[in-house]
Length: 398
Image 1 (cartoon, rainbow, N blue to C red):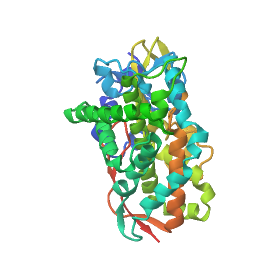
Image 2: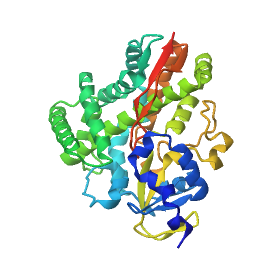
Image 3: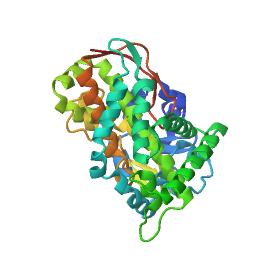
Image 4: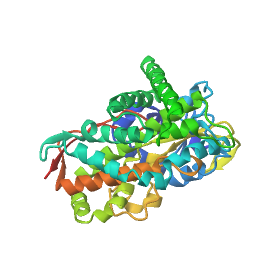
């Protein structure tokens, strides 16, 4: 038996336990990289890739490592339903068709036109923070900020952001297992967007709902089922990545106040800080791919049909790429070849938007507050998919 298939169970078992991620998983990731870079997880039955080079290689090769057999750990043991329009679960060439339909809504030129509105949203939220007081930045800042932005982008009323947030929270929870609550949320969300689609087909506007319900590639548009899947994905992707990037960045900066002061003195450093926050937090912890043929990776043979869990969070602390400072938060890190936004065919559709939101938010925050400090314990989400922050009490000083 290969070394990767016979590792110490205590080394791999935590990866399948959502509670493991509510703590600090990074020392365990380091042990994985050192002792079993490609390790077999018997339950549910998949490989774990923890090295940057392996994650990158697999991400770049959708012909050998497909997404259509599942992208979540729970997909290993369930009969995967057909999910039309689910970008995460679609392989080339169909994936390219879907991306061409939605890409115009996320083009760099279009996203840049949103900067003034995004800045206004950030300022309005930061206005609610009392300097020197303890503020839980998750519900006050990190949760509403991207929801308001994605509401603007989709063309839904800004006052509906709490509903949007409720739906996305339940959809994220469903990544660990479907519940009656998450099923009800999907029905409610579908009804909401079907009504909106009917309205936009009668009266199109300059928003993503209109763009998607009228877009065509090669004379073919999206049916209602595909549209609902797209809107759900855009809600989750447009919310969760930025929400956890912003909260993770603020927590990291509160633990490294000298870097907050440096950004305040040199705001031109903020784009580098955004990249380091992406690496440090890695908002999406992992996704799954499945081998379409026998293939050797890191000295192990992955057989056709075997799934591989890509640990992006581990790859982003790989010492062979980021050197001896891999476990140090450094807002001057350059270059920074992280994989926090994926790679290859499934590179994050909203990457430009997430970077813009985070940059604008940090620019406004450091201009307004001279200091940042922890003010209580940070509570993290128990999820092997999303590196979420549930509570982060901080003190922002004038």
